[in-house]
Amino acid sequence: MLESRAIAAEPLIRVENVSKHFPVTRGLLVMRTTGQVKAVDGISFTIGRQETLGLVGESGCGKTTTSRLLLRLERPSAGRVLLDGRDVHALTGAALREYHTRVQAVFQDPWSSLNPRLRIRDTIAEALVVNRRVSKAGRLERVEEVLHQVGLPLGAGGRYPHEFSGGQRQRIALASALASYPELIVLDEPVSALDVSIRAQIMNLLKDLQARQKLSYLLVAHNLATVRYIAHRTAVMYLGRIVEHADTESVYRNPLHPYTKALFAAALPADPDAPRDDLILSGEVPSPIDPPSGCHFHPRCPFALEQCSRVDPVLRAITSDHAVACHLY
Ligand code: SF4
Image (cartoon, rainbow, N blue to C red; front, side, top):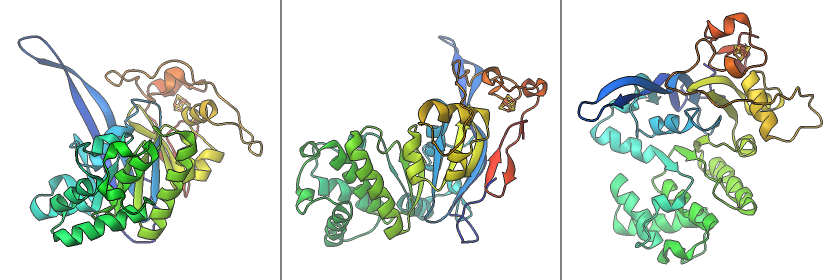
């Protein structure tokens, strides 16, 4: 596992060999389990303090399930998620409430976290009532503070969600996440629903908030340029596994795994300074119910070796900050 760049001895979040398998059931009267969807299959990573890890990959690769595991919206089938060394899925009572203040989320669709019938200030204050014991005056003061931090005008708290643009609503979702003084925010496609002109503003805001408030982010995004702009490290997922994990500039300038090369060639304009052997990503992503044997990528890989369909490549460090799961290395 590649360690976070954080100077602190223990990273904020440590994901240890985590899997999430969902049963596939069949039958009308009697349901039978006929297989398992291996949405996440034995992944490990860390996120340091004030660090951003980007997760990229095609739809269905396990990015969103990974983020849901960190948010405790799913329980792992195996492995552990540790926050400051404590298993987050074993937390109860006050420790669990504390977890929900320390770890927050911002999703693609800000509407999902906003009640259209509540004024903005009440929506944000409600989150504070659930998560922290703060007086009413203290809550209102905190609401004004976070609205100011995300760049919304004075008085915005008294208005309703429909009175704001898409970009402003994403600022409100961020303010809501910030209210409980979190340390980690899971950003699941935070700018993909926004106009291109607004995206840069929100991405800059995210970077600015991270620097000022020492936040850590797990950034899930299909837009590779967004991840490159925000993430310090990037992990590439394919069919539930991490196939490459490196310092972001290292993985973008010098992708090693054939899947990463093909993914980047399809999505990013060529960098004139970097020699690239562009690959074309052909074929569909195989079903996670019955993934290919050995390296899951072998049916689509132009470099497949004889052993690739039999032997599972392990994620191995090639340099101190670049790991890849491929028999070519
Ligand atoms: Fe291709 Fe083999 Fe590497 Fe998989 S392990 S990416 S099939 S060369």
